[in-house]
Length: 311
Image (tube, rainbow, N blue to C red; front, side, top):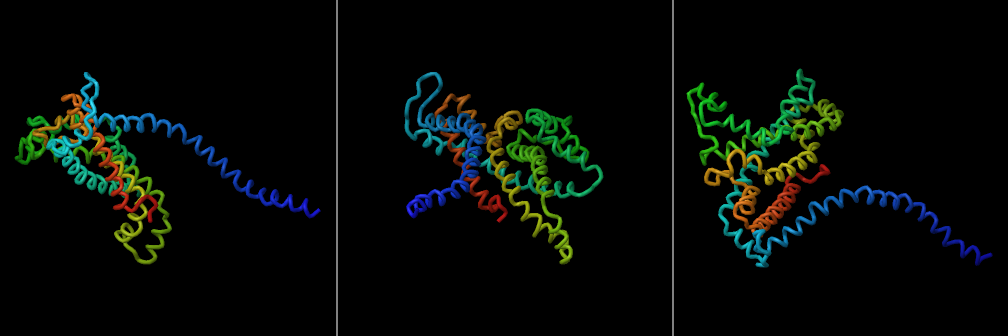
């Protein structure tokens, strides 16, 4: 009888472990099954192209002839490419000026629209409309606005006060600022929508408790609203940085990187290298550099904002 009890003891001890691990194992299996399509899509359309681009970046390739391995020669060429680093600088300027301004305006608009104000539905549509409008259409509208003749909207408005006409897109001093203005105008809508959704998730009891303690609007905004919006701010900052360094169609239509490379950006420089100079190996190396820059920017964005958990 003792031996029987001894043999039964391991079974009795292992049964609870199976009961505890069963649901967790099933949950893990279903998690893997549900994540598999997205993981497969990422592997095929992102992972494999990155690997191919890295391989091509170590070759001299012009599509016509077979790729010839040249090691890190393309990367050495990039470090001597003045136009490429000018494009990087332009991207940094566009991001450093345009993103903070658009995020600030988006937060202001979201705070306003989070309150019961007349016509807020129409205002939401007006602010969000530029984001859902095709970038080609946006660029064509701003080409008319920036038209150097007096028929352009901007020069017509400035002509009323005796200024202009100004060469917004053909002057090296004005072209980059003009492009930044367009990116701000187009980017506010999505940022505002994300901030608005985040604001509606803030517990009203926090504001009520702070009102009892005598906090004014600015103090509530600084100590409650901004900390609670930290995850949304991190998301907006990272996606805005990535979108900024992927800007192509807007530059292609407005300025084609000119004048004198004043508005050239990284993606447009990659396009020039690949499809105008037919140096696909060098263009692949430039793409790898762009990927590394985005990884570094994402890391520092997380450090600056403080992550996504609000800590």
